[in-house]
Length: 203
Image 1 (tube, rainbow, N blue to C red):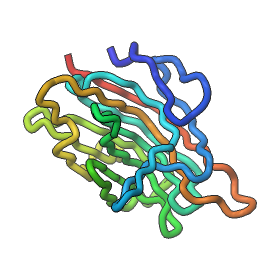
Image 2: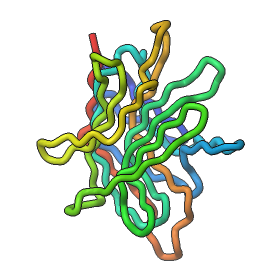
Image 3: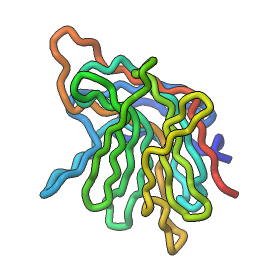
């Protein structure tokens, strides 16, 4: 069961919470991110808390993220990472990112290089976001949703994320925080809260 898989940290010091924990916080240092851009920029030093298991088992994950977002590119949300045999990683991150003075719903996916898309947050409580990742069982693709009340708004389909022809690939699923830009003097440290983390695996 998903609740029995231990949490692991990446790029973060401390003892991970128990496997059954569903709410936690992460505080990043300045200058950390997950980002990839030609011709040679590869950044993968943002703090993460995740569970690792065969990608063929993934069905759904969900969490609510919130913080006092104040500085350009402050961010936090969910990660879906696919370690490769050659030591590289393909990855997806989706959550809130502070840009042009306001929080946006931000999604980035990276195979060889990364792309980036932004969508508006809710007018009420824009600093809070519930996200869901889910496998489309018919097509074998990964869908990303924003959850608002009883509604799920689809914001991205990643067609290659779950492709595993040999049935041997692993994935990391969890949460992350990033802070590429230094805060102005007097601005509080970024503390990102996550609650109601859910992970559902297939039989």
